[in-house]
Length: 46
Image (cartoon, rainbow, N blue to C red; front, side):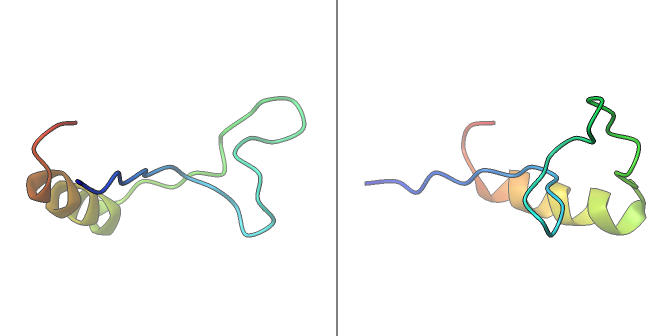
């Protein structure tokens, strides 16, 4: 059986969005792009 890997931004207190649905707390930089690229390359379906 294959593994299912879920990747999503989530705060330490377990929330995905702010009280009004905003997601402006997510900061994307080169480090996160490198990490995501590595994880995606390990799978066979995205």
